[in-house]
Length: 369
Image (cartoon, rainbow, N blue to C red; front, top):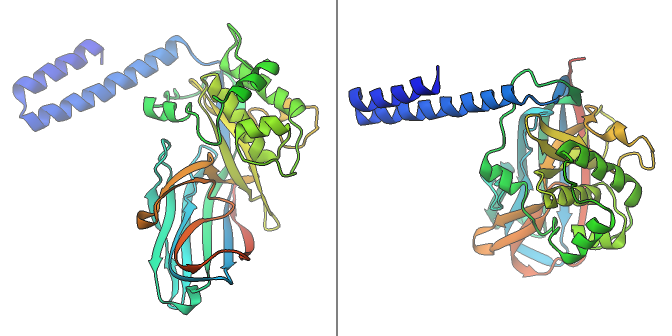
């Protein structure tokens, strides 16, 4: 169907249909126009690459947090956790969280947080007179997903990859508290390391250059580097995987390339423990491409960690800054809700001397290769 025919359909719908039917035909026509335009653009300028995904296994990641507050007496808990995202390499997800009470396990509910990214999360707002919750709480989560290997391959994709919606794109370009790339000191660091995109340099070549530079110029270290934001990490000059993902995402966004940090959980087999973070950037016509500037440093083969990942991880969270509405307990800007929950309370005392014991269990539910 040509665009001329589509506009003819709109005209006929106005003449021969009732208003509801006309609106329906109009919306269908607009969707077809957008689809045809995207397909025509992809055919006129086919991408040189595509992402390949191969299904590996389905796994569950189960975690328990047991908090104790010896100097606090609670009458209400508000607790927030991330909801596992669906990504191209971590699909068919199932996610739940529960609070342990004297009556048993009470489920969290799924809501949307308030940042520009509008990510789903799990919350529970629980007023109580339960002695089990007086000076602490126990929560458990279950994440299940089918995990895929991912690889950037030569040649156009078998089906066109649509561009990001404008609102989504703007969200992946925006500065945040952690991604403070507009800070003067961050801009100076980027200039000192020659990480502004050059005239004629495409996004793929630039992202590869960013990854290679960070692997050599930002040493991996788990030492305390202070605040978890880009300008501070650049100042101290080192960082572990999450800090690397923050810096890489910041540099790419500063260069007008949609980018995000991905936080994941090891889920290779039943002995898996721990977490890992890396970055992804959106390549027009191709989709989200992974890169890792911290894994296996100082391995000189940086290309082994660009555009490809084994199916070793289950997705846990995208990006770090969360805006959480805790009702009468206020609105809060929180850094990350994956490695630990965010929580607020009504009661008496303080949280000094708090203790938290955690445990994790990984199970492989099915293998496909």
